[in-house]
Length: 267
Ligand code: ADP
Ligand code: MG
Image (cartoon, rainbow, N blue to C red; front, side):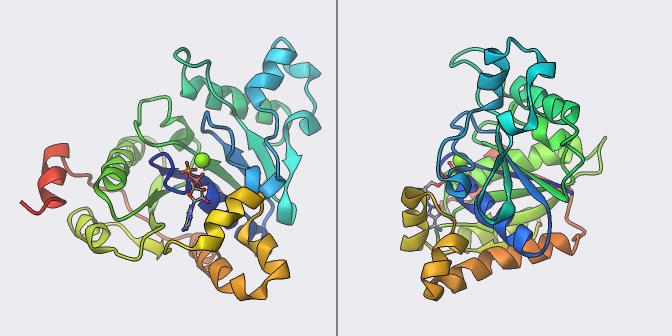
């Protein structure tokens, strides 16, 4: 199964992705997480360091795919989750879609792409140009991380439009929204009333999640020494269980930009 996690920059995609990956591994799945954000820190809380990116490795080997070994680019992270960072195109040049394409190509050449029960792509979704939509070409399900604010929901609606578009030629479904770092959900609810889609989970702001980034650990690893954190792990296990039950998901009917402004405003 291939999953693509999208959402606005800084919304909590990588944090959520790493913890979902461990949750899926806890359920006995062989998991690969692929960071597709040029920020290349997607897998940081799994490995505890910034692993070399596919693009750096390809450049180092002059794009000789045959000189690259799986251990050059696939790192073993916490809980048995395998980790890859696609890396970014050069700043101001190149295309994120090209980077994702090269990453998938290399993993296929290494016979690694079909070796996993679950591959999770962690993707930046502020602007969804064709390049950043590329992971949707490989995905069965898209999940969108959002808070209860206008900007993240605006990005979510754009991502929903990309899913709708790709679903015309590909069996892709939107599994749903993951509310993050918010205790309120009135705008999220208003949005899903207008554009029906499941809300898989809503996580509040939790200080230990913020700390997990600084420590380079997932919540599951932190819970080993502090069992009081197991309630946070349960949020991620719940999301993993919903995904593993292969939900029907939706092909979203996104709303026009201008309608979204009036829907989410008070005036
Ligand atoms: P993204 O990958 O979307 O850019 P990150 O996952 O890197 O975002 O998260 C950005 C920051 O927000 C990190 O420092 C992370 O620890 C923090 N964060 C994410 N989710 C939560 C949460 N539910 N509560 C508190 N802090 C969070
Ligand atoms: Mg990230």
